[in-house]
Length: 283
Image (cartoon, rainbow, N blue to C red):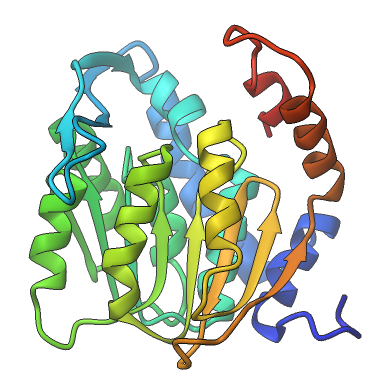
C-alpha cells in the first residue's frame, strides 16, 4: 500500500494497528490517559445521569435532533463500555500527532477518554468537544484538564454546539472526530456543516462505521465524497483526508478487508430484524 501511494500522514497510525509498537514518548501518553480510566474504574459502582441524542424528524431539513430518555450509568460502564478502548484511543492520538493537528473538534465526549488521547497530541493548541449529557460533560472537563490547558467542553446537543462553534468567523479545524450519533442522517448532516470549516489536509474520523447497516451506508457515501483526497477503512474508524480541491475524488484504502467481507455476507444473506449485527461488527 505504501508503494502504491498510501498517504504519509496515516502510515504511523496504520502501522500501529498491525504491530502495536510505540515509542517511549507515546507509551507515556497512553499511560497518562489510561491512569484516568483506572481512576474511573476504581469508582466503579458510582453512577451519573447520562443520555444520548436521537433523530426526531428525519424529514426536517436541519432541526431534527432531540434528546432521548435519560439513563443512569456506572462509572465502570462508562470507562469500559462507553469510552474508547486503549487500542483505538492510541490510534486517535497517533492520528492527531501525525497530521500535526493544532485545532481539534470532537462530537461526543462521554467521560473524555477519547478527548484526552486527542488533546495529548504534541501539536494540539485547541481542543473542543461537544457532549449533551451534563454528568459526563463535567467528568470530561476534569479529565481533560489533567491532560491539557487548551480544552473546552460544550454541554449541548450537537446542532446547538455546532451553531456556537461554527459561528466564529474563520474558525477552522485540522482534525474532527465524529462520534456520538451512530446514525446515517445525523452523521451526514454533521459532516455537511463541518466541511466548510476544514483546513486543507484536515483529517476527519468517523466512529463505528460498522455499528449498523445504517452507519455502513453513511460510510459508503463518505468514503467516496468529493473533496477528500484519501479515505481509509480502518475497521472501527473511517478516515478522510480533506483536500483543498472541492471536486477532488478520493483514493480509497482499506485495512479491514476480512471484516468488510463478513459484513457483505451478513448484509446479503436472508435475515430478520433480530439478527445480531454487533456480533459481526464488534471490535
